[in-house]
Image (cartoon, rainbow, N blue to C red; front, top):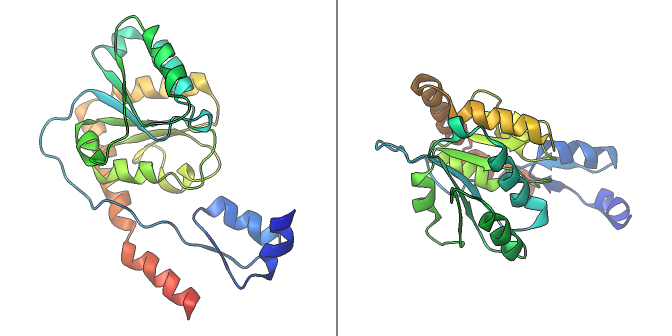
Length: 224
């Protein structure tokens, strides 16, 4: 209620995703789409990637890492093979996630603490899996793509749909559809080299188009 009263009085509302721009405009706001600038430059990796599915983020109910663990355990074991799931972060869900991981019989899930050298983690991964219930932006998706990692994410409100182009740099799954996420992740793990390379190149292309100078020019225009 406070937002709907105050925001329309502002000269401009800067919003990092397109879905919320439309919502604020319905309130009568002068809302402008200004995405966050990326935190990493494109880094092309020549060496062979490890069989690691990665999730990075705070360990909270909204990020739904517990659902990701559940999905991981539903995967066809013949497809999953010797792949590992790395969950990197800290947060209030940490102990609950540790308890869930202890129940995993094959030790294929590894929980790692947050690190300042997150680039080293991205360099090892082949797939980025994102199961958030909601997101304002989803910066970790862009970070992963800067290292050429195809992403799979729920199509949650509202950031991932601005970043992931289905079957071009990853996959968007209907929000909350566990079965669809499982099936799509199995598909991603089963891709041949040509199809994987297509998604890798799509990830690099996405980041290269996320030009920081262009984003700063949007701010310049607003301030002028």
